[in-house]
Length: 110
Length: 122
Image (cartoon, rainbow over all chains, first blue to last red; front, side, top):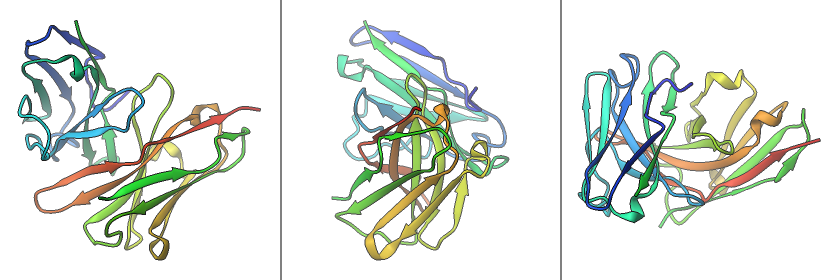
């Protein structure tokens, strides 16, 4: 069971807005920034959001991140079929002194 | 651009030691803000962080490995390695090597290798 809790699945139709939550604690999200990764089947994970809400160059502005207290969220607007992937949140955990991943959310575009 | 490539055996027997190497090409390897990390994904499961090493030699490991893992770095060859002892079926996974960057405004793993599959079977 992951220290960071994500819903195992999410879905939406093309054009819709979808949000994925990531719940942690004071020792991780409450103390450190959150990053989000997109993992397509057969490919390496890709950095989608860093430092809670920053997008690397090349990531569409349809993707946005936010953090409040011990939780974070990833929002995807204008959902597209190519967004179908697994999404992971990560944060450093002070108690474990290590990086932790959420359990991952499988996004299905209906 | 920077590229990472994992290499190592694809099949191990239980109790053996897993040794993987990640070759880094196309960019700086020894910048102080970089760290080099290993992450794995068992079939059907999520990503799991194994550990990291800075080129200064500082390391951090996932406590769940119970001291079975060791990450080392060879700056002269721009590569780093993972050694995992006493493997069991639970260690079967796709293993990714990756680069992390730590700065005042950025702390994230930004570049990943393609991954290498490791099976454990007697």
